[in-house]
Image 1 (cartoon, rainbow, N blue to C red):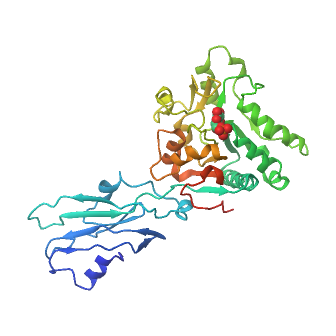
Image 2 (image 1 turned 90 degrees about the horizontal axis):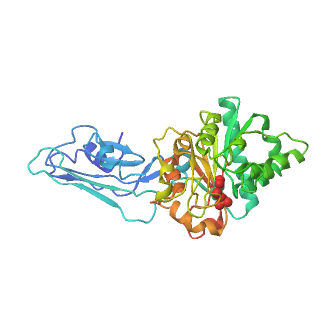
Image 3 (image 1 turned 135 degrees about the vertical axis):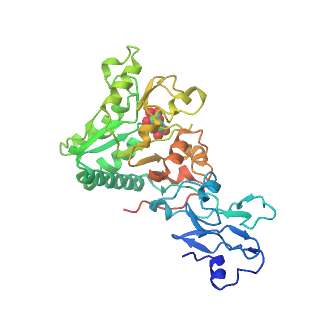
Length: 379
Ligand SMILES: O=C1O[C@H](COP(=O)(O)O)[C@@H](O)[C@H](O)[C@H]1O
């Protein structure tokens, strides 16, 4: 039953016949532990709402005659918070948004709707923040192992996709160098793919596979001869033949139907995978494409030719996790981890669009001066 002031007043019999009943309930209502605001429902003399007037739209309590509150508010409201994000869903110090439907004169039906609701929280996803790299790497490894365990409950493989770049150092520190966590990884069940790959030979210094081998596979072998995961690299024999579309299609054919976890980086320009911002690369951001891997040409960051997961591949993952460390990432994180993310940046677009499955692991330097709650991963 609705616990709002309007319902309490109605139950006391104070509403009917008392003239135009307009209630403004204030901001003292909590739903699922989240602060909410009620809509003011203005009623003409003696007219009670036709039906139950209580709705919850994405965590915002809505008090209206409308049976379809989504229509009124859906566009303005953020994506629903997940259980994980609920804990950090918080009220930002921003002005209330007010929507108003003009009153139709002489109607004996609810006539005006003043919706007062909280603006989007800042940010919408868990951002696990660490003062030092070692603690971040350890919690990242624990997060990955939790995804591994969940995957192995669902089936017999852990399908993981990794990015290149700075993320790999954190993987090495957390998963490879830590003997206890290394032993918790069921390596034989791991199937590792690359979110993006530079179209170069596998031994080349720019190869993401090569970097993963150097940071993870080789050190694993050195530790007690641990045979690492099964890895899926690009078909090297196509490199340099001008067959980049075919190379992307071949790689696509190796992918599992769904990833259990995709580990993402974020460049200072807001790119993730090899999805780059800007008009030149907007062809890579087609959410309706049936390609799961695309050829990225003229990459602004060398080398120029790459392949990359597309948005549908990211969309189908069980979990997506970004890792960003260092002060150089702060300006771009400011544009991503805010209440109105700049979705022209692919990393922001992914965070915003798949918010319910996205987590960020960052260090304090990367989020300095941002409104990010100080939370760490709860294992
Ligand atoms: O070029 C790339 O850059 C991004 C970000 O790398 P970072 O070193 O700034 O963390 C990486 O995620 C991607 O896989 C890689 O190809």
